[in-house]
Amino acid sequence: MKINSNYQYNHNQNFTAIRIVKVSPQEFVQFNKNFKEFCRENILFKAESMEQALFLQHLSTLPQKENASFSWIINNATRHNLIDSDTIEKLPMCVFTGKDKMKLALYNLKNFIPNLMRVSRFGAEAQKENFPQHLRYAKALKQSADFDMPKFKKFLKKNNAKNITYDEFVNEVKEGKL
Image (cartoon, rainbow, N blue to C red):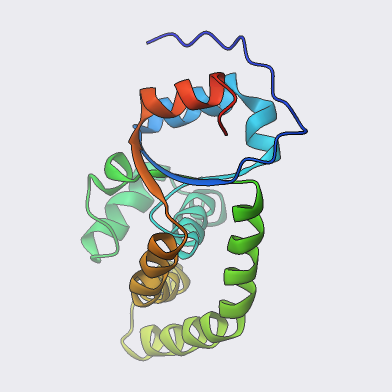
């Protein structure tokens, strides 16, 4: 699917929105490539929450740290029940624009200390369990993300997040609705 990126982003627009977009990993990469300015101006991540995005980002840094392949890290995380083999395929893209970017920032600020303490506690528990050392922090991040998920979903509902398809989202962006 080729996307025409004849897109002019209007910096003066004050639209605000939260979109949860059903998207494949390839569509996510393609969107980031074709709509660079929109991506720079807004908050986008491919995960169900910011905490889950941090967990996935950490997993993506492990291959270099462990001198291993990404597939080995994913297989290892799957074997230790941190992710399902098709998790990455199913994740939505969350998009925050306008004033909703500030709402997300305030949400993250409010939850920073509790999340930090939770990650620390979960990390200590992983160490006591003799969980593989290279996955201990990932496990702590995952447990914290899972713990926080109901609160994040409540935040999305309160702020009128809209679930849409990838094509609907691209059309909204092209039409300047976001």
